[in-house]
Length: 151
Image (cartoon, rainbow, N blue to C red):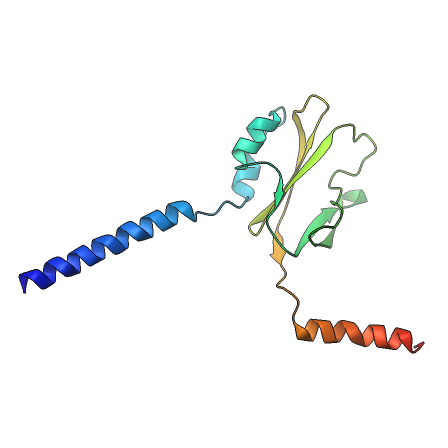
C-alpha cells in the first residue's frame, strides 16, 4: 500500500512538472490590448519590439481585421499570407515606416518616424478564418461558372 501511494504521488508530481514546463514553453506570444496599452509615443523601435516580444510578424494564415478609413470609420478587411500590407496610417504625412504585429489575439500597427521612434499606434481585434474547405471551394466555383456562361 505504501508503495502504491509513493508511485501515485511520484506520478502526480511528474505530471505537474511536465505541465509547468509546457506552460512556460507554449505561453501565448500573441499581442493584445495589454501590450498595446504599454506602447508610448517616443519609444524606440527596439523598446517596441521588446514589449511586443519580437519584430513585426504575421502569425495568422487568414484573418479578418478592422482597418481605419477616412472620417474615423473602420472597415473589415481580410488579410492573407503574401498579400501587400494594409496601410493603418493613411494620411499624407507618412514619412516614416509602419510595422504590424498580427497574432490570433490581436493586431497592433505602429508608425515609426524617421528617427525610428514610435509616433502613432493602432489596435484591432482579430477574427481568425479557418483554412478553406471543399464547401468554400464549391461556393467560389458557382460564381466562376456563372461568369464563364455570361450570366
